Image (tube, rainbow, N blue to C red; front, side, top):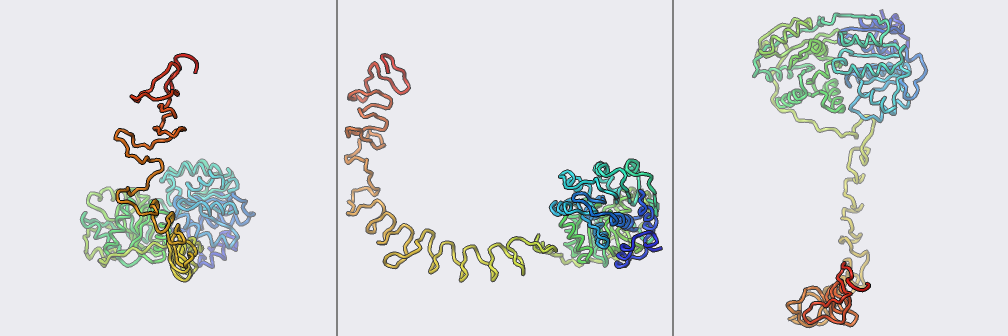
Length: 567
């Protein structure tokens, strides 16, 4: 049976044929007829079984038959738990959407809002989003779900496990009640039942495999190791030929393992939720393109990410949940390929790991190994690392090397440069075309800041403030400021005299402040009135010889009230 027999429109059939996809997978054959008929569908299948096309093709077929989307009103919604899965779904459906005139856009966290908002304002038919970012866009008023005709929940059980169930419930409540809803997941447990009962109408369930079944083309190995051999064993497995995914429990464990592998000569990339979206996208692209063969990740990469050619999955830290084990292991043996899964187990972890694997429906082969054992190389292809440390590649420019051609202000078209660089070479601000000079230099020679722009009468350069007779500012006949024209006597002070100083010597009991002259020309202290009185005293003819003032009946000090008479 081909896709045309399932009822898929011919433009999509031809677009699939151009990609070499002609035969549908089992989950696609089971769910597509009901999904194309507009019914609500529950699809359960093994990871890597083709669920993306199982919901993506009916979604595109329905949206393509309608008119273009209004601004801010998408016609279809795909909710996924992680950013990587959103981008993977978008990459898988984008070329098919172009074939039928359907526009898609991702709305995920970790990237700027601008492009997502611009796309929504122009109008997009399908938006692939994570719950958190979609909620933010709705709160900003740039996305409305009133026109949504098809809603897809991919990896619904993981969204429930990650705590997205309240956000997903709120988002589904904003979509029309009569909209079609498709729910796909590797497992359907009790956490998802609340969504099914509330939002799905008479759903059709299609299951292609029991939730605890292991892929038949996958070999499971339980490697029992001593504690001190954990990293040497992991490093030798990571140094094998082929593409390997290594899973650790924590973000710190991922970063530490990447550094340790680089120190022994194994280049690996780290992927976890603590990294920026730009770094996560770059690392995943390098792994997919084969620039590095080892990807160390937390469970953020376990759900839904598809990378061709992963031949081994290594659990450095055994998962505690059987569903996590199945999703981790599902990164290999995808789409009918073969693969192997190896789990490193310390003696204290053996009992709990075996109980977890029993719940997952997996019966692994148990082997006791140490670093350098021939059995380790036979089971996993392990080999000794080179021991040559791997150098970190320099971080590319943030914008100059973007595929959309954007670059920083001042970058040249033939390569990045700093602001102020000339096309023929870098220079500093203020440099002249014929050679570098400092700010303020004259065209015919260097000068300091403040120099005149011309020459003096004799044609010589002078500094700012110099007079034409080659004296400095304020000088006459080559003398300094304050100097007298006649020669200075040896007993004179070096400081210039002030005009208010007296010629006679100062008495020892006098204050150091200069005296002022009153109207009669007599010297007086600061604050004294013209008749030798202190500040605040009334006039009286003269000051007694003892220096104290005589107060009359009407006299008062500053601030005092008169005692007799009128003031």
